[in-house]
Image 1 (cartoon, rainbow, N blue to C red):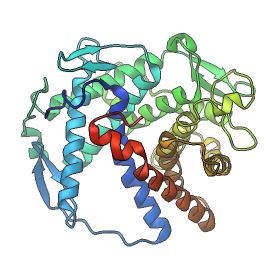
Image 2 (image 1 turned 90 degrees about the horizontal axis):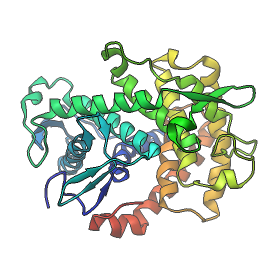
Image 3 (image 1 turned 60 degrees about the horizontal axis):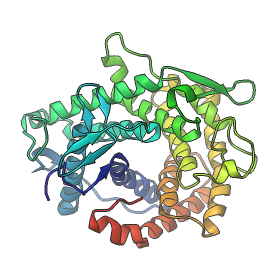
Image 4 (image 1 turned 30 degrees about the vertical axis):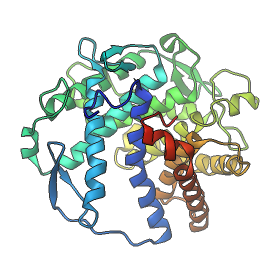
Length: 368
């Protein structure tokens, strides 16, 4: 059935995170092309109308670009419809055909939805650049919104409100209180590096969108430098990250949630590294300089873990996003970049060959 509210029988917010892979895939393969000196296709400014919006498309691959952009458009509108206008918070669950929308206390997915929203807003901001007339196009389908401006504004409100909730309190972590982590009293669960990672990613997205500057009497940006140092403090000498703050330093605190949590943390570290090149005030120079060595140590551990064969597709998705960013940073040796590139390419092939990719997605089921 067409329409953003009727994509699957039961839609959870984590399904929406799939379109982050679409965006990140472009980043990943761009980085790998650069590393391996692959030729890049040329783009022009030819535009097409798809999904009631002006879209930039590749001059040599218009049909594929149109399909991806149409999917992005539907998911962006779906994200907007998954916000509660009374509280400006994200719903957790939608139950078609009743269209019942439910809240549930899931901090990691709540923050992930905020990050998803910033990525969607940034994607369309790029598409709209130099195209002011597109703002007049009307949304088709079953959405409660009348046009793209309403969707964008609602998503901005939801991102800002979500950050406001989790920015209320922090705990000190690391040797001598070197960093911060989200407060378990706010989370209502133990604080771990995934909470910190997604708080960072939603915050860097909000900074790119100037959300804090646009809010009157609003909150200051979350303490990104302190949150990064909190994650850095959780790395062991073998490169592995401990997961839960305050837990025992043993293997159980490394392998629990290994498919998701360390990958999310590394994506956050590299996103900060990238953004701090343009906004140097978000972290100290000492913190920024610590990120690449941390990532190189992490690569040795997680690539070895991958080689043992005991991973699922979720592991690959986050590892590719993290280490493709490391390649793109151009801060490692050419030989190391080659090794990391091969690692990313193998994992991408695994994703394409996976049961999730071949069978579950094609039937409208969750990738996870």
